Image 1 (cartoon, rainbow, N blue to C red):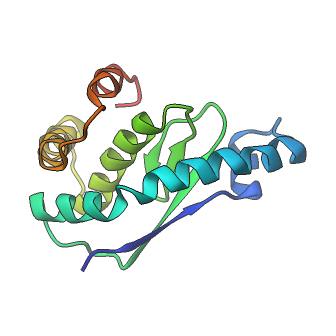
Image 2: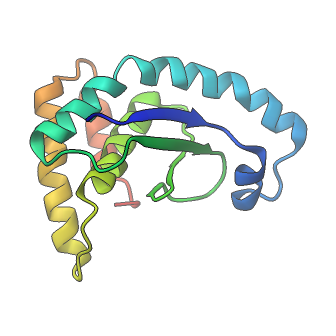
Image 3: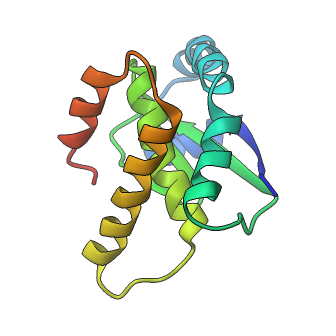
Length: 146
């Protein structure tokens, strides 16, 4: 069963990662989060289905997706994505973190885990046929987060 997802933008959660965030900055950021949410809604169901098709059934019914402003790395549990102005790049990072959620296996060797994740990631990108994402795929490859 494909899990439901929800974009979450929490003051408390953001404050944990960005102590200098002011209430007015947080409120102003809500518009940017809404724009990303609209963009994400175009892709999320197919992303989740494609990940499952290329790996295994989801074990969770619901996956909250937290968006955070600040100098953090994105991570999979709880699924937290660093906000970027490049929404396509955020989608690619989200796919990576969702694959972590789908695998749910523990690897003693992180490089083996990422080898599997990258294999599934490439299959998802091929199956989804993202038009206009070519430049973004190059940016993704050069991220220090992975």
